[in-house]
Length: 256
Image 1 (cartoon, helix red, strand yellow):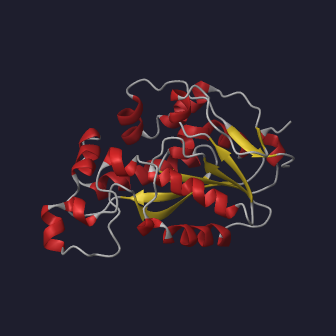
Image 2 (cartoon, rainbow, N blue to C red; image 1 turned 135 degrees about the vertical axis):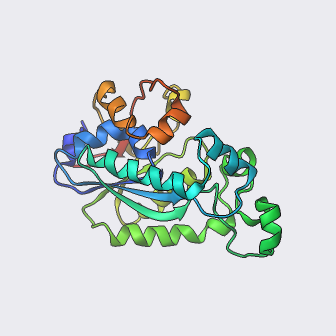
């Protein structure tokens, strides 16, 4: 039976698409593993950019009572590092812009035009159709190799890497999931179910073959205390009361 203690002394690296994703999805598990092994959360998309935001980005900022994306993301990065530190986990921010703000690298549209119609200057102009569509743009595909190299350089052959299942279809989480598959060629890779998406699916979601679920009981009170540290995000996403969020973590059979 695989338990958090099974990872004793093996470095654990958790891929988190956004600030707080790992804590929401498997924060209590990480607090248990960090007692027996070094744990690092690598968050990929951690910045919002200056400039005229799209309608989707404006709605995101308004929901969090924020005027400027850089200010909000600076606060979110600080919250993330402090929250992870409280459970003896190291946080690393890769500094890439969130899909809400990721500009087109081809720059086919002149800047004066994108200032008036900002949707023409970003890779994912709308939320429902593009960001939540589950399809990674070809313009983002070079990111996979870049991210894989960064993770490989920062890890060892003994490392255990956890990637999200990408249940929501959010392109950033899909990218993080694809990164896990790519890293599996050279590292031991397991997965965790994204929350609160797993909760909405009532635990019924596909899991890659050859993995077994890690057995542990979540102390919901302790987890709620961790998530309260993400104040700029938790209230907007979950409301005033933090619900019980179960954790589903899967590792290759025989991982120890």
